[in-house]
Image 1 (cartoon, helix red, strand yellow):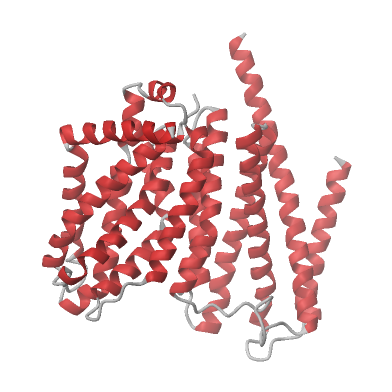
Image 2: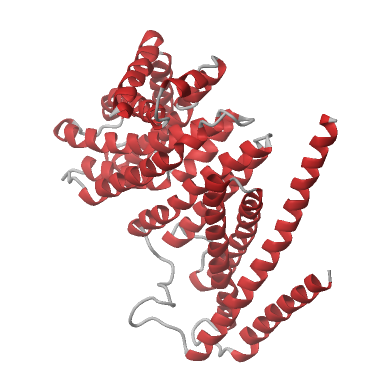
Length: 225
Length: 224
């Protein structure tokens, strides 16, 4: 209990420090002004979301091969947490886009592919609610999860080829791109904070799922007796 | 080798079952026809407008039709309780998937070929000079729809609300197929038709990725 409290407090402190750094340490962007600050949370959430979906993918493969309940619990927790972070991305994006682009939404490559990614994982979670038997649910949703994750690079590739308006990648975006050094430090610090938050939520969600699984197991045993 | 001969036998069974009643083919053709007609009310179907919107609406109609057509693929085996028999009859469960997905691709491809001239007449587009190339796009696209579609039909058959679940699982996953097929079709319907090899390659890559995934993980979908 104490350990979880300490870890939670540490993550909270990290997120608070990242917020402080975004507003008071990172310099103001020349053309966009303060609205650019949202970028730190927007892009960092996107990275954290993608990490969560990768965790889900690995857990899905492990489940199919090993059938360990723990990997099923990790899979569903990671998908839910990833979905939360992707939702943050989809909400903060338009808030930034409206003053900068003059529109809330545009069917640009990265926006559209993030939206499709979001839909795919909504389907994953919906599928889980539609399968009654726990082992079936774990196995079938794991296989769907694998298919969905394999689709991600194809969705990104297809849509990218097709249209692009999103600002070109500023991190690892090739020559001519890149962040001012202080901004870069603040950005990576925010990425770290968001990942810490993601892992905290993931472990809490995992605990919940584990309890739920064990509870169902007990109830079934009680019904048998 | 045994896998291939099993597949051939099972494919024969799928095709025979369908051609006895022709239920799937007729309903799908009528469904696509309805969508194509209803779509004409959403924009002015003149020649230039049709070239702009036609390929997209055609592929959307195919995708929606497929998500309905693939529904009974595994459900039929389940209601007749024949899935365990199939499972016992073949040495490699992948043969079941392979047979079903070839059959589904074939049925989809057939309905698309039937609907293509109707679409061309209704929407004023010229397809005679590019029929062969269009058929290639249709074939690769249908394969892209049928591979994940067959896998997900095995999933949705075991779920509640299965009629809704299959489109929900399948449609977002098919985004790349929709884009690539629509772009390739649009390029062929242009006054100066071009065969977009890049998009065809993309479709082929999609097919290979999911066929491999099905080969690796398909057997787990049929576990009792």
